[in-house]
Length: 258
Image 1 (cartoon, rainbow, N blue to C red):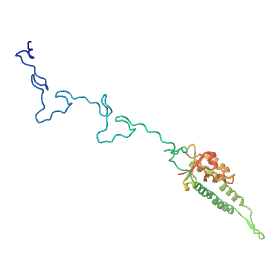
Image 2 (image 1 turned 180 degrees about the vertical axis):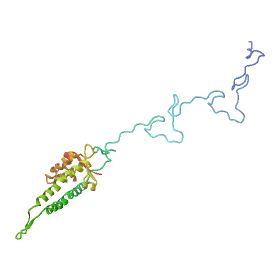
Image 3 (image 1 turned 180 degrees about the horizontal axis):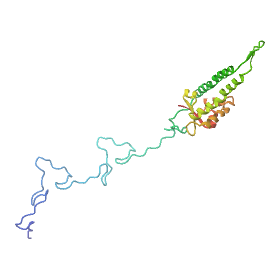
Image 4 (image 1 turned 135 degrees about the horizontal axis):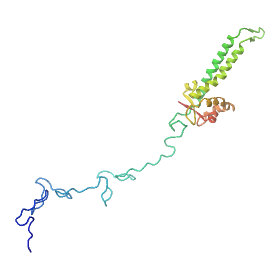
């Protein structure tokens, strides 16, 4: 059997070895002295390193990645590493926001005004017209009276002129002026002077805003149904859930704290 000539022929120049490859007839290159050998599984010198799968994903045919040594396993129901957590269930009924009137942040808006606040506010508003009305009516009546006399027998005082003018002024202040007063303040801001002092206001249930002049005028006359059954409608907010009078229920209005 004939011997095969080396590369380059007999007596020729052998090919230059490629970088990182041992020369012809020599053993594979060893690491320099003083350096430890590469760990098992490490590719020989001159070869590309092994490709690893992306971090957090198991290799093909292998079980999912386990937590490092020394760490407790994830709790039951927790998603495996690399997967998004599950969606949370909806809150139980009655939790969080509660329904309220329009314009109110549900469950967080102003509360309904207590009955005693409404009563004191009504007394303040009533005093604004009753006391000045009597005083102004009396001044106008006596100021326009020219002659009056006292019956010496009975002590009765009779006015010849001026009493009618004072009486008309009294009627205007105690009757017409309150209509304009309540219509303007309830329709524009929802607060009369008495309600401002007690920090309460009237709003519409559908809008959460002042009720407007037309509704305010209707509200003034609608209070007849509150007074008719022994003033029961005025007392109804004491035990009513939304602290409404009969007028509030008919016109769909609330009185709230501000």
